[in-house]
Amino acid sequence: MKKRNIIGGIALAMLIGCTSIADKNIFDPNSPLAHHTATGFRNLYIDDSQKAGFFSFIFNVRFKEDWPDEEKLRLNPPTPTVPVNLPKIERPPSHKIQTTWLGHSTVLIQHQGINILTDPMFSDRASPVSFAGPRRYTDPALHIEDLPKIDAVVISHDHYDHMDEATINALGNSVHWYVPLGNKALLGDNGITNVTELDWWQSAQMDDVKFTLTPTQHWSGRGLFDRYQTLWGAWAIEFTATDQRIWFGGDTGYNEIQFREIGDRLGPFDLSFIPVGAYEPRWFMKNYHVNPEEAVKIHQDVKSEKSIGIHWGTFVLTSEPVTLPPIELKKAAKENGLSAADFITLPIGGTFVKSSDKQYPDHSLQ
Ligand SMILES: [Zn+2]
Ligand SMILES: [Zn+2]
Image 1 (cartoon, rainbow, N blue to C red):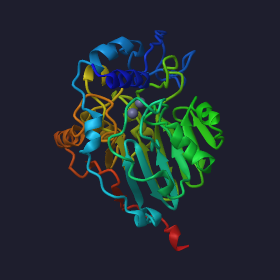
Image 2 (cartoon, protein in one colour; image 1 turned 30 degrees about the vertical axis):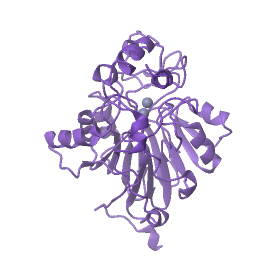
Image 3 (cartoon, helix red, strand yellow; image 1 turned 180 degrees about the vertical axis):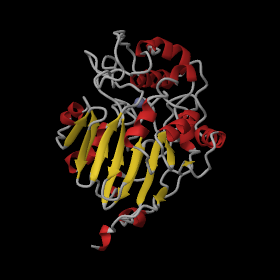
């Protein structure tokens, strides 16, 4: 067994989380605080204590499965990539939603002169250490210094591929951070105070943009002993002046309740970003990471007009072939009666502009 596989496996195990907090109290999933526990948070529709632990992960997942080799992939990355259209992102149309996929779960959302980043991750490795752990095989579409001025960042949860300290420090207090409960502390440790921390279903307003944290089915943790201690979630981003609604899904498994609830309470959404990668093997990942078929169900449950698949093509976090997610997504979309244009993937660096039939005042003319 190669040494780097062992190091990579251990670091990834830290990413995945290694301990189990069993909480078998009877609880009412409809209670607003049902997801709170004495030590942190829990999922409402799965038994978190059944989550496979450290040794199961090491022996059954990392070493028995035939994983894609990230070092080989780095030499010739198979993910479609295009250079970012810089003039476009420097002068976005104010009356349309313009989005650019920068890799993994990092999306630049531009509308009405506001620039928002989701789960910004510009580092080489999704890991607590610089010498080991999942290493990206495709570069970010942009250097962080080439971004337009960012107004707000939404963070879905504290896993290293979504909450990266080097990126956090580079953006610093110049942006407003929206994070799920418990994540303010990590930003504070890095001297960042421009933070709003929310529970599920809580909202905060920044000018004409309303940010609401919605539930997902996932977990949190950055080390061996902090699993479930901070909250995870997804973000509904509503541009109130133009009635444009976006949903950013973060990381999640599927259940038949939460996404319908999101669609009923905050939808329909004009545009959603839904994870489509990191889902094999299913026995290990199913509760916490959707596959493309379940991503399509989420698209339908949250009532999204159009969705873009993210969380693929960047890091090897699981065992499925890295080019499979868009192929499986196309198949799942067709099987569920969607057109190919309803749920797409972009090349890394690709920009998608969402036009709208909605009538609203054009503030750019004032
Ligand atoms: Zn995660
Ligand atoms: Zn992730």
